[in-house]
Image (cartoon, rainbow, N blue to C red; front, side):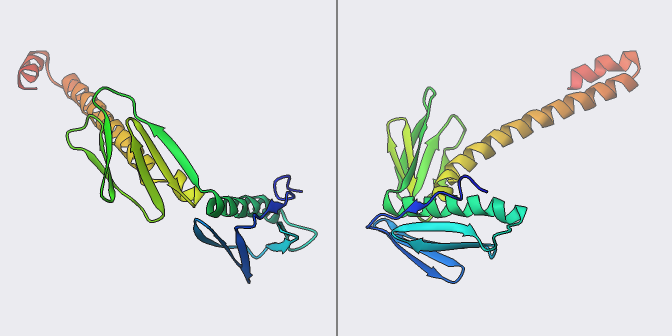
Length: 191
C-alpha cells in the first residue's frame, strides 16, 4: 500500500478535471495541464476529490511505485493551475546583478560576458534587487528552469578547466621524470 497514493486529492471549485482514457486534463484560473496516466493506474473523480489507485487489487511492485507517483503528479497539477508555483533564488556577491530584458534574464556573475537565459514557455522571471523569482503552473518546469541548469553548467565548466589544468601538470611531471637532470632546467625556462 502506498501511503501517498491512498490520500484523496481535493479539487477546488475553480478547477475542472476531465478524463479522456489515459489522459487527464486539469484546467484552472492560471492555465491548463495534461498528463498521460500509466496503464497500471486508474484515476477517477468522486465527490469533488480525485481518487488514484492501481487497476488490479493484487498490484505489482511497479504499480505500487507508480501509484504514489501519479497521485503526486496529479496533486501538483491541481495546485499549479489553481495557485501556481514559485522558487526564489538569491544572488550573493560583490558586483553580481540580475535583470530581465525582454524575454531574457541577464546575469552578471563575474564572468567576462553576461549570462543570458531565454525564458521557456510557461515560466515567468521577476527580479527585485538580488532576489530572482521563477514562477509558473508546472512544478516540474519551475524546478528545472534553465536558470538552475545554466548555473550548474557554469559550475561544471569551471570544474572541467580545473581538471584540464591538473592533467597538464601531471603530464608535465611525467615529462620531467624522463628528461636528464641538465635538460630539466631548460624545460623550466620554456614553460
